[in-house]
Length: 116
Length: 112
Image (cartoon, rainbow over all chains, first blue to last red; front, side):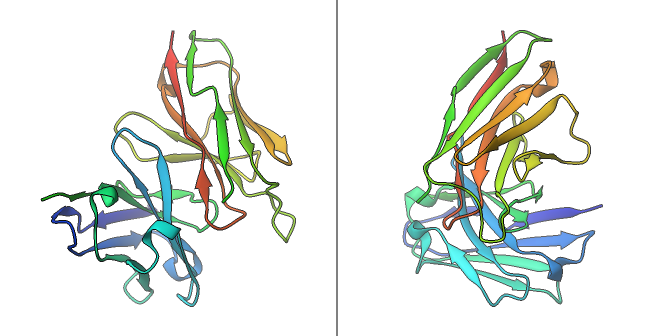
């Protein structure tokens, strides 16, 4: 079964850092672009970042550039999102998704709350 | 950035009746290889998004054939031929042609 499982969410103070992980299974992870998408509870979807199959190309939404870093470990079938200088506006459910431009498989999401 | 505008934002529908959601992009969505990266997602209450349709009109495996996508250029449509109770939730269009990837605001489908 194709599956994505996120972890690492939680409560963090403004200005703090958090690292999210996404464990992939059931498919050849190294053959796919991967994405992070977030959703403020009760609001719409916002694409955050993408990474190419071999990790050589990444893209970010402007609001996270310089603060967030997407990375992958193809040997461990794992995707990560390092989030620094977090602000209250980063509070959301974070989803990892397979594919860069068409997102066919989504994880269940992990909640990140930025609050003092 | 490409702005994706959905309408309506709220869609009350009687069971068994058709439904239609429009999605308009502020720029054309044809990629350099000729592909149009226009995707439709469904998000049921309390669930993760689920892809229904990719590349304008390609229905995903397991998606009922009452769902269909169409359109070209900057004007796209998701149609449900006969709404069922399990179709309740939000529907989002997304363009993957231009960076940054952008979503529509979402359309809430409810049973009248």
